[in-house]
Length: 199
Image: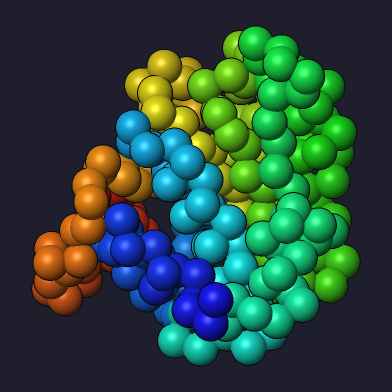
């Protein structure tokens, strides 16, 4: 598939276009909640964003989708992009996993990419202790880190966690491309920088 990752996210074209513009302007929030009923779509959007941030062929804020970097990120095989999920059918994402995969390494510079991206899915599975441990990192992520929380239940996260992240909502839609209006997006993009965005 020769299509670009963010521009290929047709089901959530508006959020994808917003993120593409943020990448192009180097203004992607470093602590982000991607939420909505379509969690598979939100996870796919998170991976596409990781590609857009790190693709060496990046153009207009989007990844090429076909270089070695893009393919390795897509297959979960890139050193600088970590996906943290429940292990072996566990009910929760444990604090040890967060320490090992996020908290213990978030301060390191990227090994080869521009940004280290940490995708936690589903974020609502993080234990209370884990959410507490994440707070400082969400509040002041190191310059090269982007942390993306994927969840269908953003309001189940601790209020402190919610308040430190920008929120982007993916509606369950067949195709919302018709909704993409530039003025609309500029306002949303500005909001993404200053407060929790409800797009």
